[in-house]
Image 1: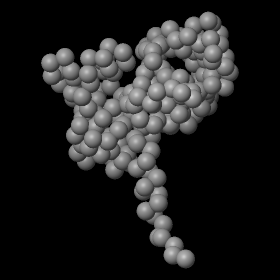
Image 2: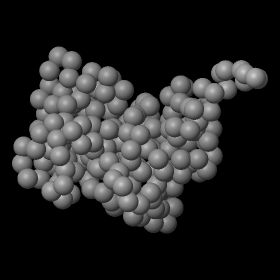
Image 3: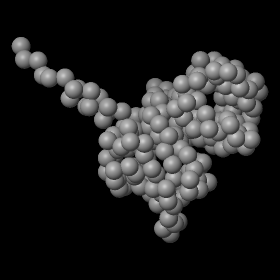
Image 4: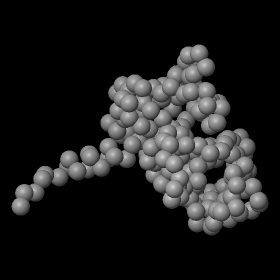
Length: 206
């Protein structure tokens, strides 16, 4: 589990693609002294498992075909600029860690796009488009994760939502570099899915 509070903006250091998977190496400034093989790290909001430590400041992970199909990594790896791309990083929660954002699983629901960006003082108001299948899970003043960042939805319409990014978020995540048309990983609040599933079954009276 994660909270959507980004701890470092790392970068893709190396890519090796195979037919049904890809192996990536990520560079980070985080202290990895306590990290172990098999630990989870959210990379742009996608929960990945550490498979190797190729350097003192790097870790490796393998992305399955499912992950490549459902996240922006599949699109990114088809771009010559993949190596060096900025990636939001958050290690998995440990007992005693503060819950500063909201409960995030690292299971990306789908990919959205930047529809518009408006500068308001030092802040930026960004509107993201939503896939039809995710629109019903996004509510005004609810939580959503964009590239692993926990955000509050300010406004929502049928197929888009708007958030306000404060200067800290702009300077400490890769959201500050977003341009109109950019693609982002989205994870909706998981509690909405539980409610929807429960509503599909009639109550049983004993």
